[in-house]
Length: 275
Image (cartoon, rainbow, N blue to C red):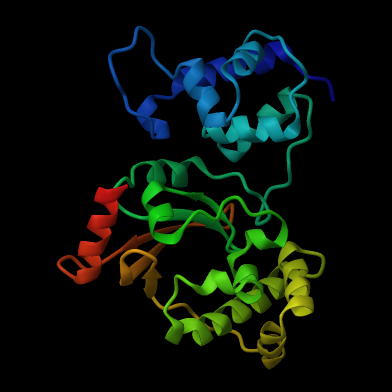
């Protein structure tokens, strides 16, 4: 499939012009001579150099890789259909849709961008953190840099003792049962050869605790709304976890709040003030 440089450049310019800073979590700043984002702002959102992005809009530069096109699609907050169109313009086949995809829907991203004073994150059905806001990182740590099976929090839960440090010890046994139950349900739903089935096989080979829970064949365990956390500076907190699901992508937006007036609420406010 050949790259359509003119079509790619035009599409990028049009999508950039349709976005406002507040649409992507950037401050509006002073009045602008033209609408839309600046090229430099899009480059920051896509983790590219401003020069490279500018060359794409000018129909120049090397053939962009699929990884680079995926970053641009995410930075421009493209819908799945728009993302697929961008891939074809760049001369690549679009990635498969569904539960295994990492492309964040623009709706969830718009909500996350507006949650400045509340810890929040977007995760896959395998517990892989795709995006976490600043207060979410302050509360739960930075976990978006993992690769391979370790991207999944349930995988780290059973294979890395450090993964449990931010959760109350009295809840560890329940969380283990919850993750094993969820792993079996997902592996059955997605079928052999799926990513959930692969991850379950990895855990069966690595964790004796997981093997015991897996062979117990318990399903239907559901998480508690209230999470009891142990923060390294603030100590124990109790937070409510509310979930908004993007059914098309099998992604969830998790928002963590505390009862107003409670000690946990005061600690969250202190955390927000300190960052």
